[in-house]
Image (cartoon, rainbow, N blue to C red; front, side, top):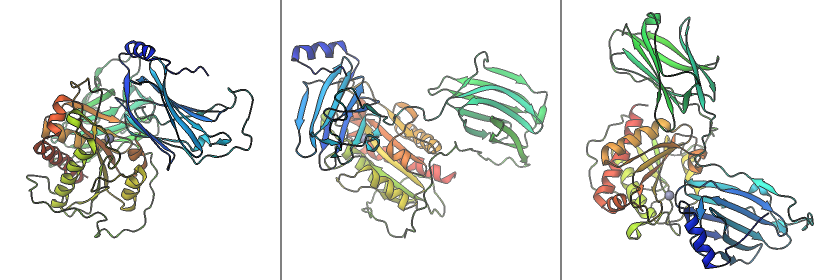
Length: 492
Ligand SMILES: [Zn+2]
């Protein structure tokens, strides 16, 4: 394994100018009592890791990341010998957790968890005495790979639209590749229906097209268009010549999406038809919980909720999860503002507004305490919560005050919720739109109910930092988030 540490500050300067685009490793910490490494980078990173012997060490590479200081070697007592940081090559920062002589760990038990695109924890199992402390005299032998969970890697194979076929009872949008994630809506007047296929592209040689259907099944025309979105999306539009038929979309066992008339309706009352993307998470059955008892009672405040949507007879329980806390400030931005404080204030207000509308809100923390990721998830599971909403603030390089805006993350079954809240924030705050995105964050993967992670702005952004420092803007943000949650609950 080729390996070099920075030898001089001169070399360091050289490397950093050579990697002008690399993101900086912003902070790191090793908690020896829990064998937990925590690190934060500017912008997203996809770590790579391996376990190497002689001596046994966990080597974590952060591609596209630079260390803006000399290498670090922090010794520990106990089974962990030291944690070292260095620049491995022009754009890779390397973190090495070295074990004391004669100890080893099971690489399968090393757990990487993405908290947000730029924040990770790595949990090491308790080191055990190696049965054969020197598995081989060859230092290259016994290299295991530990595959971290990609935070922004698409979790499904891309869907490719092949063609549209007329069938006996409707239409079949034939697809290949991954299972399509679809969203189907029909206009109030029932004359137009749109089917959006997430992350899908048209088969090579197939261009966006309109086709006449000769009035088959009461449909005059079908349009198939590639939308210039990121990730890409295919929109199929049905234009009806008779407007009293409701349509529905479902995944077909033939490979694709079938569109079929669901029934005839005389009155044109509004109705929105939605097909959830496939759910891949396992659903656990939580123990019964007394919902009248709120584990973390919310302080009463006096400000009013304004014109928020009413959710009638709601039995919904929404877990509001303010990120970070305690020793973990999260992102630190312009003027020293800290993510943990901003998101706690916004979370309090969101929870209060929900409670005012009759929706039970439970916060994962109500003060400046440090809470691990597992208890945040297990709280939601124990309560059998309807929704889980994690609130964070974003950060990038301090020299990029031009980067501002909101991002909303979902994993498998939170897409509708993500879109609804994201849209409400854009509308309510005028924040820049940095899109709804899919990511494998721990709290999104491990919650069985629809869950989202909101990045409410950049503490390193000139615009966002000023706004997030303003209590009035935080209230506006909270009201927009609450409105999004209530709208989602209302239309369920
Ligand atoms: Zn965060």
